[in-house]
Image (tube, rainbow, N blue to C red; front, side):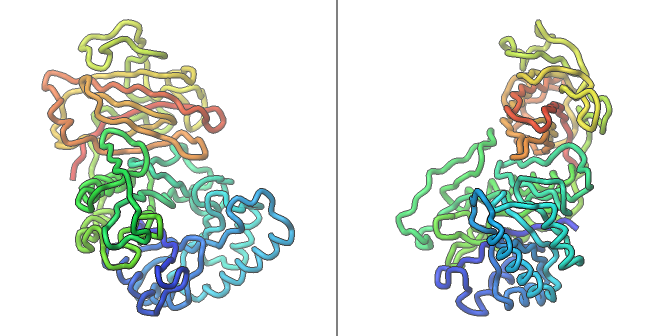
Length: 435
């Protein structure tokens, strides 16, 4: 079952970390059910027990964070560790009888993180009935039941290599789009500078109006649904409500306004639980540890017009994807090359599909061209420096660029400066999106 819901920091303007009433606690849970969520991640706090009762009663799954020590504490003292473990054991025992709780998250983004492997097993020893998420965000120690990634780019990515523990791949934080609603701001003079970049992938977008956000949110949800085809099993949107200076909630901080109407959110979110769209390969990515499509490629800066030339540009060689520097293992390359700028191009016939999707396997930034027109700038990276995989739909306008006699797909890749174990790879695929 795919799981989707928000990050919930549990703040209220008239109670701070305490809901002002039982009805206020019930309202938040009921709203999430109304908009089509089936889970919620409680972020570095513990709600009152009545909140968990409402989750039990209304049927909302809970991922519960343990409450971290000081965020960036450079050293955990023995006394501090004993106190933290005492408090976390008390929390687990207190919430044990709430069936809605299904995940204990031990650490978040490395905040106060220590003895990760021991504490995962310690958590399991207290409660062997729930899943344990060792580290949400990064600082993964290859333990626990989830591989949890935080990715706020518009097109998030997952680690490409198979997980050695066969853990579920989840986006523990993503989205986080800012919209301010006049009359419902915590800081009355707060402003934002709009940032919308359909061509790029430069991080969290900011919108002038809820209508502008809704238009982009449709595309973002479509991308999450496509990501299920490459292994995504849950996603946590940041966040349920605005929180003081953070205007990225579905709801305003006072809970008076759902920035996108609740029925529209429900309609969009229901698509995440439907079957993944059928993908018809046009230029397929390589199968696991296999050889992929043939490309022309060049290392270093390319010549002019290389993205659109109908004939082979000078200085290009022929090779099969994946391109990379590993000769063996799950990220083994078919064409061996050093970690440096890579330009690759191939040809394809115009497909019958109305929409096209790109699968990107790499670590770094990429520019994707169709017949010489830039159609997407992409950032494929996570904090742990893995080679990643992502899939996203190209703009609908891309169909107007296609020619019946033949087309050129060209990709320029600039590798990430840091990659896990020194292993780098590049492979791109083009697919038609079905229903």
